[in-house]
Length: 143
Ligand code: CMP
Image (cartoon, rainbow, N blue to C red; front, top):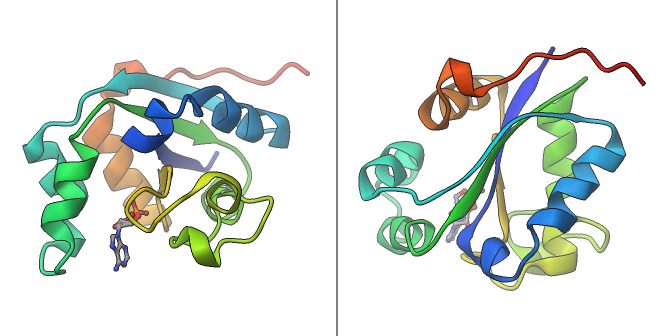
């Protein structure tokens, strides 16, 4: 079954949006198979956002993502990577449609509440960066 990596960023944790965000993915029907509240180290931040290393906002991005706890999650389900991206909305909250997470709660492109993997390869890479195999559960939905 397809899996994706989602993370409530420091602004989302500070604003007490973890429950709201988890609830949206649960109500959609996806399964939570791993989760932890954690503090990202500078090393992990640089690795996770490695593709943005040359971008002018890289320093601000890594310092923001390490500024407070994040809530890291692995979700599973049919087409979960693309559907979660739709539910998150556009990267810049000013372009994100109402009803999406960033459209409803995001303030600025830096403080955009949530990160989600954009493709199968990045999902696999990001899950591996944040979670050990024994931190993920396997269970079959009974209902
Ligand atoms: P995220 O999905 O976590 O991936 C990279 C992050 O960089 C993105 O969300 C934004 O929060 C942040 N960011 C800051 N400035 C920019 C920018 N100009 N373009 C794209 N992403 C940006």
